[in-house]
Length: 107
Length: 384
Ligand SMILES: [Zn+2]
Image 1: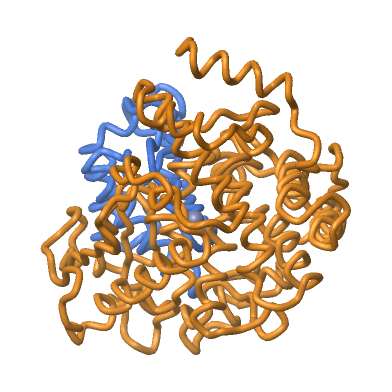
Image 2: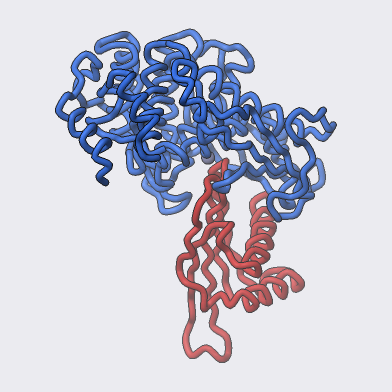
């Protein structure tokens, strides 16, 4: 499973982007990310979740690509959303990925 | 505020005060609001006393409430607003974020009130609500449509790894967030592409003016940096944005380089950040800086007034950079005269970022009488 993560906007307008191959992460991180993806029903979310009112909130774009044993062919889904509009499980996933992305950036 | 807009705008349509007063007293709610707004506007132009003093019957408009600040603490959670920790008139708490949010939202209120005669975000005395200590490792500040919210930066990391300080540290960030509220009640600039970058730029402009006024700085003295002090010493940068030299605020191995353009030639068509609202704002930011530089003195007095009146009365939801150039030019002509040095400075400002002002002379000497008549019929007839 691969994850392409992008956070943009916010007061600073700093864009953070990172790609993760799940198998290459620490086992605990990989497991946490995998379970949050499942809990958020990521593949059933609409491609765009409108942010609603508010300024300087973060914008996220998340793409998850997978080909598990039960997938006949590769599956890929992208969701774009504002921080306030993301569902609760997604908030946790975004927070986890932000931490991982920050780690990757400062390396 | 639902001012009539376009050529029939009240600025160009000065009715005798007694007629306005009559409308204000006997009209429908919508008519009253329009009449009072027009009185307030024209009174400002002529430098007279407040409309409510001239017309005691309009005292309902002069909301008695002044500054009304409440600071909440989210205790590093994300529930808003959190618990109340300081209300208007309370002593300092000793918590820097709480006290900065209180003092700086007060300084922003004062700029709007004392310089532009605006009573808070909605011009009706809306209480100013701010939440600090929002989230964990939350390197951001925002306006959520109702209130201001500030994170602590990356307080969750070991001190040596931190890149950001708390977001209340810079007074201009507070002015920036509060101004998003003003824009929400006035021009309602759509937060996408150029109108969104104008929205961002308005917040930077008035954020910077709050700081300059607090420091008693002229345009020449000011650093024109947004978010000075927000970076820790780990970051190679002076702040988040530079209005004087967009694109030069930081250049850092971890954060990258300040992406802001200073000229239309470098405008960035991008699909993130709502179409680059925090990036292309460098262009109108720099235009404002040039206007202030050209005029000299305190930037909030003339350049700021032109921008404020444009935001309040002229800009619309979908105004792009060209519209904003034309409208600030128009306002400069109305406030200071066609061909005045102020109006010329506005032309120069936009020209230096690659935008050529195109409009009439913006003179108040030739009101659009036809538009005026139409407006009267519409207002008095109460038609929609
Ligand atoms: Zn903003």
